[in-house]
Length: 219
Image (cartoon, rainbow, N blue to C red; front, side, top):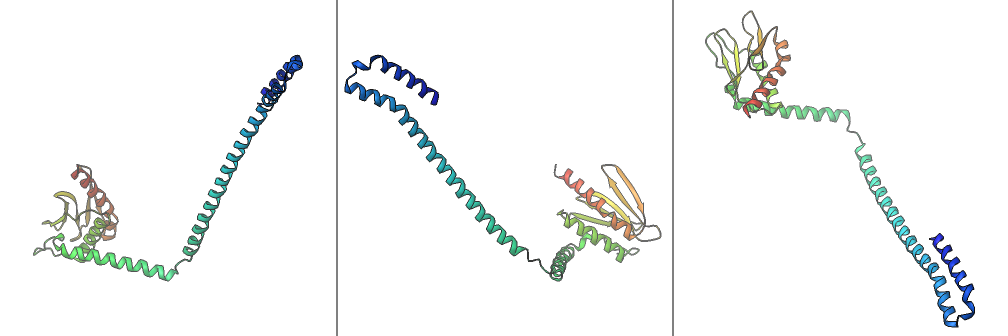
């Protein structure tokens, strides 16, 4: 814009110097108007840009204030939440949740008494077997799997477990030899010997297999 104005002024002054004697008053007024017109236009353009920049600056300041207000409110909320619950109260809450969960599990197990194998003359359900099955059923519920579980007592004392008609595994906690069968895929399996504690630790393997059966069931 400045270069244009310099060139225009040079050309304008040169033209006037050549013919100024022949100009009338009206011509001089027109020439003066034309000379100052670019300056007026430049002034108006600069003024418009200045107003626009001031408006943008005000909007930024407004947004900044609004953001600070939001941060201030959030800080107040976090400060209130920072009042940590006493440890004793936390323990009581955890204990209460556990008791509620236990009630739900026992309620379901009571309604599903047929989950346990039928007793025979030779084999009755012993505490270790009941504890193992209760732990297994509880894990099934924790993993949000439907209790479509069936158990059956075999002639050798084993408890056979299946899900929706598909085998999950076998466990034997009566007699001299105690063991647990863990299935893998369609045909793989392994036998683990040990005690109740060992078998309870292997329950997650049964849960994984039940999930495997459930996925294939839903296909």
